[in-house]
Amino acid sequence: MRFEDTEVWGFRKALRGMRNPKNSWDKSDSVFGYSSKNCYKHNNLCLECEKHDPNAYAIESPIIGKNDMKLAQQLIRAGSEHRKFMRQIFVSVDITAPLYWWKEFDTYKVGTVANSTSTMHKLATTPITLECFEIDDYDDSIMEYKRDGSVYPMQSVFVEFLEHIRRKYLETKDKKFWKELIRWLPESWLQTRTVTMSYENLLAMCSKGQRRFHKLNEWSGQDDNTKSNFISWARTLPYAQELIFIDEVEE
Image 1 (cartoon, rainbow, N blue to C red):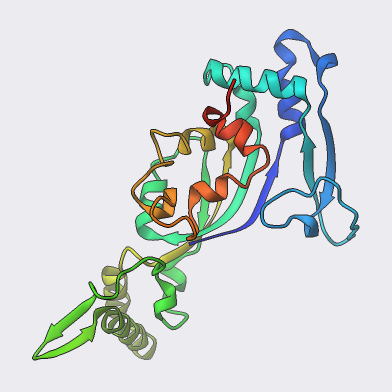
Image 2 (image 1 turned 30 degrees about the horizontal axis):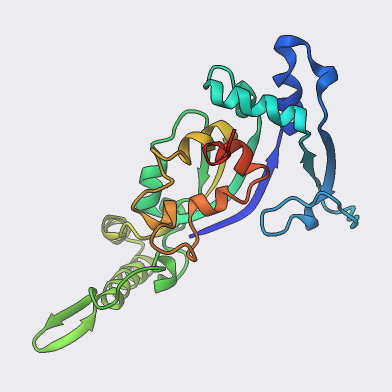
């Protein structure tokens, strides 16, 4: 599983709009600047960018003041009808994950958008290898297949089977091989999608009752936090602790 090319934007307008109901813009104490795309390292915004690259587009680098943070957290704790500003802070990221993870992600339809690579059009264009599947935490001892006194590594047998079908399709252009390739493609197949969502979506997804302690390691990292997972990635976003994981912050 991988999270790549993360971008976050909308803080300035969101926090200004947060103060619209009481016309309290004069109390805002946040600072907003921009840093180079090349200074965006490990998914953390560089707040003091000393590099200037004319070929790199700018990324918003907010420094939220105490007054604005206090109001933001009050609104978040007050409920979804009060924290509308969270819907105006946006995140875009390329996620490469297995199909079984994407099935669960697709539960979140409201406010999220995903544009995926095409299995239908591109599945047969490149060789099928073990690297095409999610194998970060698989147990190869469970995958042993015994037949006629011999032991076969089932994962290798299955990958060879899929690659054989792929080659037959390329040789014959017969649709029946393509259909069987689609039919037998396992849930561990890795697919990349460009996903856009808001901090409000992330607040819900990362809550204790949703994915924070989910039994799938790809969500929570509970079994092995050294493996890439959604919650660990979300924690790297700007002000994630204060806004998304606010229930871990003392009032």
